[in-house]
Amino acid sequence: MDTLISARKIELSYRCLEQAVTVLLFVVLVLSHFVFLPPMYANDLIANTSAATTPTLYQAGEILRENLSPVYRNEIFERSMRSKYSGWKVNHVADGIKHIKMVKYYNGKPVKINVVEINPKVAQDFEIMPATASSNSLNHKSSIRNMAQRTNSIVAINGGFFKPQSGIPLGTLMINGKLFTGPIYNRVALGIFDNGFDVARIEFNGKITGNNTEIKIDNINQPRMLSSYVLVYTRDWGSYAPASPRDGVQLQIVDNKITAASANPLFIPENGFVLVGPKEKLSALFGSAKVDVEISLNPKWDNVKHIISGGPYLVKNGNIYVDVSEEKLLSIGGRNPRSAVGYTSANNLIIVAVDGREGSSVGLTLYELAQFMKSLGCENAINLDGGGSTVMYVNGQIVNSPPQTGGIALSNAIVVSKKTIE
Image (tube, rainbow, N blue to C red):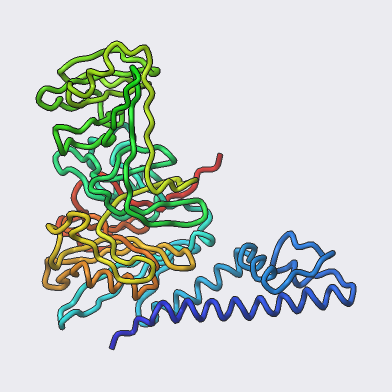
């Protein structure tokens, strides 16, 4: 019998507990107001509450949710994890971070699954973010252990798709507000904010203007998909731009000025970029005294700190939603090792690594993975790179069984790293 209790029931239990405490808090505040006593009991639970006014029940609930003491919030998390994953071993990683190992059966065959669930409001000493194989350029690959150790991380899982030969990420990647690479086929991505998460398919918008001419920019730091594309390459790509398309040209741009033009690969300056595309398009910029570049993403996602791409969707707004064909990912079907990331309505982040291609674990289809992510309470979830790339690291150890011992060399990962004290 499957002993994994429905995450939605756990969410309901949590909300009932929260509402009960809210009512208790409201009663305490009202009584303290009318008997002219300072609200000592309320202040033990919350911070910055004025004794001069009595909040409404709704306001009291909002105060409670935002100002629960770290100890009390952690106790709620501990209880919810024990209940949610009853029957499985729940390993303590850090306050607000749990690692669960389980074996489930699909059509009578075993599947080994590793889950990490994180409550960011409890795990306040840690930051969830993408990491790359190298801090110098994108065209590198490294083991997940090396990436975790370099970023002082206690949890890591392989990230988005990448070009095997070079390690260049294939899809949207933003770290600390800096856009490294743009989307491919508008694939779905996870946005990470200071106060939560979001998921959406990402569109790239870019243009360069000069000589009263506006030219569309199709992407940034991505391999060429069409000869007609105009692409921007920054120093994150490497020292030199890739080869021009047939009858193409490259423009080196520094401080909004064209400093060099050539059909051959140009050096990418530290304080500029190289634009590569068809000469029939870019020749309109020749002789321009100044060029202006604008790059943005849709959705705009104000205040987003990090973005990492994956695909396809698994869960969308609480419903199973696997848009494989729309994201041009038909090649990753079948039963395979899988990696996924999602978040609950309470803004807990859930990352999952599924072993496959072995007798003790046969892997999951994308639809089965979507069902599993929904069973954990994910409101939104996306698939990450899988197969030989699937690998999870927790507290210095590789906790799953990747096809290659220790996992293959990867381009990027999602890490849970210790925050640096500024």
